[in-house]
Image (cartoon, rainbow, N blue to C red; front, side, top):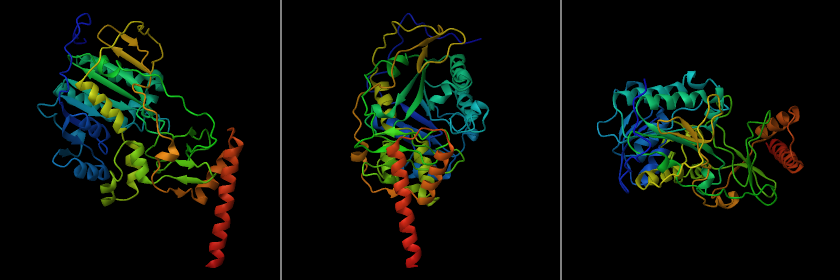
Length: 404
């Protein structure tokens, strides 16, 4: 039987204005959620992360914060924890992963979060994952998680949020689930909305991002921004996106610009090189965008007031919407967009501070072969740029061989 939740008729007390919450970060990665929350005035007391390279970053960037290495051996949350924050592993929920859902070895670790909450419920819970969880098996993973939160007495709301809303030229949508025992999570997560910024549709005169590791079914093509940074390719190889510059050259961005595309300071993941340089791209790709976490943190300290008028209750079997909430009286669809803020992203070409590396000949040839074997429609200018890039690198490689 589900625990009785606070009544919807009488508004639960709001979080104190600009109150500083004590945070436990589970599956912390390199601390995107926690850095954003700290910028909003909250204090991280515990970080849990099992990846060695990520722990090297956390140990240096969150000096003095207790660091635990394995969530399965954590018996309970610290006594005065007020917010549990977790970007739980998404590999089994993403489109590039195994699509195993919560039965997958990695994504099933979310049950460790629920185990900790059963032992010690905390006032607030913030979870982050990929939007594919809304659609895989008709949203079974999200329904299961929110159902468990309801069993524990939580109200909850979730919202798909695009990092571009905070001025980052990265087309990155993620689902954020916020749950509370006493307060109204809608006032934090759903109360603020803004019209989306219009983006150029034509690639003329702007830099465009794509994934050179794809080409069979798609490219992740993004005009004047990069597609979502990711931890690795479909076979687990860490991979930077490609960028087609206005002059027709193809590059991969510098890792320092990738960190900035996630809202981190440049060189944030440098401590990971103690374990190995190759880890940095994976860590950045798996991270939570810092400005999104900061916005949520500021709304926790200063909530708005959500107006649910017009929100309809979902019927059994309905597809999950991009934003929804439950206050104990069924799940309701929210009209909140992926744009809680409206900060015009900088042009990708202007955003990049460091010279990228030319896309390697091997990578370019591999992409070209996959595109030719696929049924994808590739605009002429992109196909031409790829062909010219390969021709140029082939000539340079031939000259280098002759000189040797």
